[in-house]
Length: 401
Ligand SMILES: *Cc1c(COP(=O)(O)O)cnc(C)c1O
Image (cartoon, rainbow, N blue to C red; front, side, top):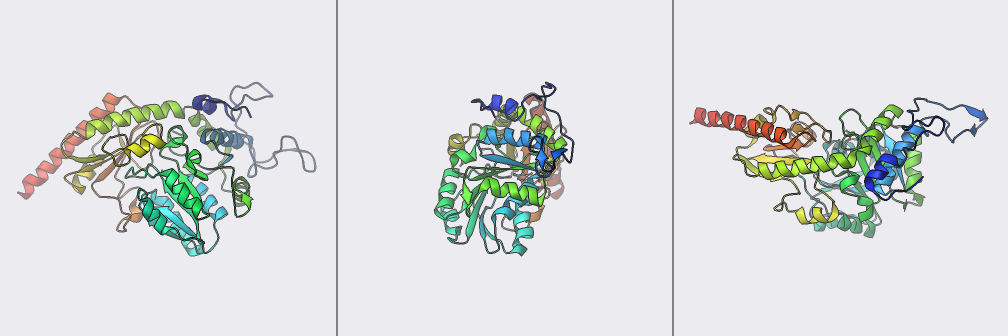
């Protein structure tokens, strides 16, 4: 496969070469389960059955591997299917995971709910505290360190070089969930991570019209086998693969990732700066703000600060809930990373599974997935929702007075 130096050129062309037979500029969607053989086990282009390989899936995998600077990528039916395949391929009963505490609720549910009963334990840690990470590592039984940065929904920033050093000193691997940053803004494999996972449902697909996940591996071995071989075998033998239609949509989205991330980031930065000055807003969590505790680190390890902004309300839970139900353009919804703006009340929506635990999300917090619409329209929508929220809380104060 040809290698290109620029991100956007790679995004448009890697794994997406025109069809050699017809000249179609866009490679066709190979909507087939099986491939005809020219003799017993004589395969025309290496394809036998679409669980093992399919040209549309392989094209998307090559495109994503090139963008993450990985040795290989593997596409799955959802982000959690990718995480599940990765964890079951690498771990054995008795293994231990050091798990970034502020992360996707579903990852927590998978690791505790499904892997716990199979004898895999974990310790949740503050992702910004490397001393706490080091203290949680159990030499001999810790097999994986797992972190998301920026984190969800608190937008904490983890020092990936530091995490990688701690993992490798213990003979463990570092897995980074790169869903929030996307490879356009952050390439964890270049910072020492061994594996990147994605929910391609989010920025990579980018249009809220497809579920998918991916595992991207570095050219490294674990327990005596190359990571690409281990994950490839799991994908084939476990079978949670992404279908050709879904891979086509994810690959099409990925071509414009760079353009979209530029706009998500500039809109998010402008809204974060504006929101911080609005009455009733106690705090804006966005790594692009200079007062954010992870700002300098994010500026070093990312090439932009991303499209997710969280905010906390001085009037507490009632104000946060009222705001989340008052926007019009920002649709009240779970998920993120699409071209359209979304608003989420995380403590009861995405993170309901960790309510009442030490990992619970503050009840005064609302998360925005800032889309690519026009900034003025987005700001007008948030201003109207803030005004409505204040009117509601003033009337609550008046009633209780
Ligand atoms: C959505 C998400 C996942 C899970 O992906 P699905 O495609 O919903 O299975 C994992 N990690 C992060 C950070 C996510 O946002």
